[in-house]
Structures are given as C-alpha cells and as structure tokens.
Image 1 (spheres, rainbow, N blue to C red):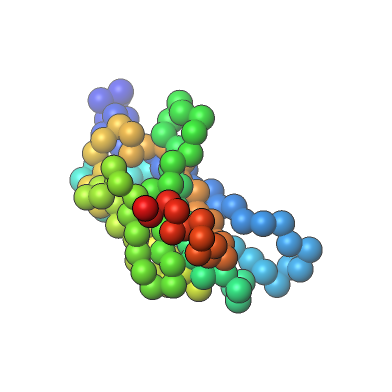
Image 2: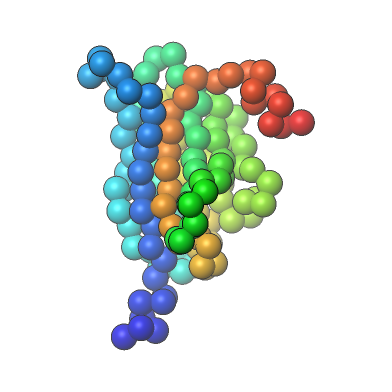
Length: 132
C-alpha cells in the first residue's frame, strides 16, 4: 500500500573519518539503518575512541540530492545546530567520545535521506570563521 509507505521516513546512516593504519582508532555509528515513523523522535549515536578528537559532526543528504549539509556538531560538550535546522534537530553528548543527533519531529520529506556522523579534531580558526 503506497499510502502506508509514505507514512515512514527512511533514514540511512553512515559514518566517516580519516583512514587509520592503527586499528585501535575506531568510529561507530548506530543504528546502521532505520525506518522511522513521522512525529516520533529519532536518535542517532556516534562513538569514537580517538583521544585527540574533540568534535562530532552530523551531516545529512536528502534523497535525490548529491550535496551533504552540516546539520549540527558538538565540540567537547558544547552543542551547535546550524541555521535552518534549528527546531527540527538537536545534538547532545561529548565530542571526545559519544555524540547524539536527535531528529525531533520528523515529518518533512526532506528529513528522509542519509545521515553521516564524523569524528574530528577541532580547528578553532576554521570553526570561528563558520560561526561569524
């Protein structure tokens, strides 16, 4: 039934980080796939064990779009949701180990798509530029 299928949002989850020869440095994102219902909050988790990394970033690519958009990030314990995504997303956790992206009230077709989590080392100069 096509009307039933339209009542679900498809969320594909991916993560990316640098390539490491050392297998001790790892990044995990969960769940790996999710089919969510509209108006029910979805929570995504990214964990890493890279001691020098202090930031977790969340990106989204809508179905049929080729560009990824930065939705939110958490630097240490300071959350930041990018303009245009406030009210639809929140972020929490600790950029040094575990971060969460909360899709608050998924109902927009553009909320469907692929979500990418990334672990990173904060570049203060670069981040300050994007915030101004």
